[in-house]
Length: 194
Image 1 (spheres, rainbow, N blue to C red):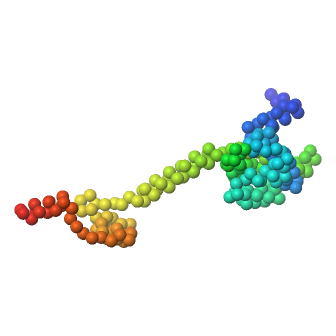
Image 2: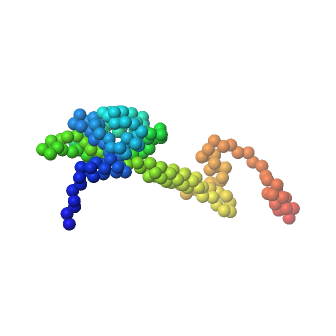
Image 3: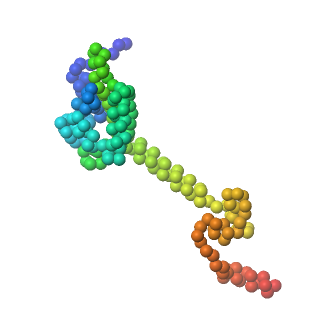
């Protein structure tokens, strides 16, 4: 079964109404087209985004890396993928997965790049939350100290059992003074009386 070809108006609807943010850059690496979804996401006009105007929305911490990937791959005419934060129409930065591919005209001449972007903020935030959870669990686990249930000595990393005071002194700046709690004092007094 062969697929039916799209009419020009169907193709235009497909490009403009697709849930994907789309862009095109000419041979000078300047963006000369953004679909309606992109413009709605950004809350800006084609004129504002045109050329390098779109880059005003890239988060300052991501800008240099984003520009470097874009220029390097544009120059070598190779497919690229990158993630960066892009300012949405409400001023909130959202993580975007951007994939750019070179395209040629009907005669096979390089004509620029076409790109598609998807908002991946939820995935990035979920990965960050998982990373933080794992780091906290590792921190908790690394804080577990093996201690003898009877004599209360602590086993160090070299498998040597040390008195509690000795272990803590070698792992902190804590100083100790000794005393006796009321429960132990009572117990010791009873032991001495016998």
